[in-house]
Image (cartoon, rainbow, N blue to C red; front, side, top):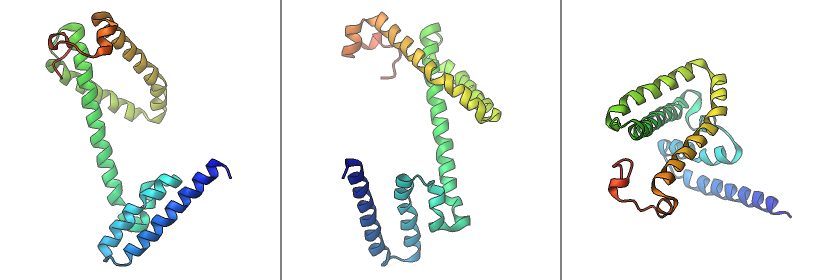
Length: 176
């Protein structure tokens, strides 16, 4: 038997063992706890078999009740999107401060608004524009990262950069 087949058998055995353990524990639960446990147990098949968690949660919440995890997913995604926009604006403001001398605190709000406007335009234009932008975004990020690394090495020297020990007055920003 190949290693792949052995791993698949071991995974199936683990799923069966977890299901049996859950069945024993669920027998002693009340209805509210039962729904919560069933909803949480949908995560394993979702990952193992590629089911969407929202579809898998129909068993716990029913057709209308699946809105509960869907709303949680949407709120989480929206919050994470704003966190990423804020981090991007902060990075762009720091790069602007280094390049132009404008304080990063003054540049972060305009960059934040620009990032939100860009995301809004991309979203309104649809998925085809996402695909076209995505083809250029990855290589573009590699180019920017390479330029930043080259500028850092040119300014401080390779030995200092590899050691990672700069004096506080040599740092680009006081973020540390």
